[in-house]
Length: 317
Image (cartoon, rainbow, N blue to C red):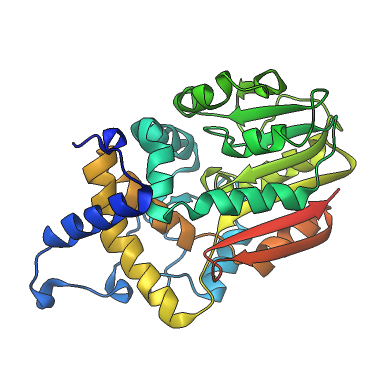
């Protein structure tokens, strides 16, 4: 495995080099190249919940999945694989343990650095104020927390709340020597059972993490619970590109480039196969908006980013 973190070049150049290496390693026989629509949906167990038509779930299957997301009996998904619900937390822990050290670099590489713009936009849209207390659910390596800490002044506080210790540790150094360091705290915990009292935070946010929570609805309900009345909730998550030709290219990139780069750099093809699968299982923006309103949030809005690859949801308790 090559440690590309030691290469002194910018992310775009590294991405170009790796893209060349990736395609050079493919079998060049066209007959063996499958389109994304030919990728088969793998199901474990005898009670398959869903079967999508192609890579992206159809409307019926996606809505059925969302309706059953908080069912304690039904199996849950891990990418395209269905597993017992009590297995998902362990699988998520294993997944992020395997990529924690390379997580930030891979994010910048695979997105060409655009994820930084998405995160800055999301935090700016929250309109945080000095003295605010912020909960960063599934906060991982603290990108959102660091951005928020700059807006809340010396009297504010941000809590990075994540179930994976390896991810928290991988991000500790980023704020350690900055003046915002005293404003950021770290708690290891499950997003479905947040260890803070009701009405404790002025804002709560989650970036690219709610897909990995076993009971997504419960995760949002916990965010709602710990928010003060009038508190803001922000969710930044991947979604389905809106322009069909671009979506086709995005599918090719997701299923044929990401896994190879994941294996080459992070040493885990499996982790970067799960990533695009989990994105395609996630509710579309309007569906997520409906879920948030049913939980009790109001003034729910969303904004597409980069042709809908990512979406920011904002809501008020």
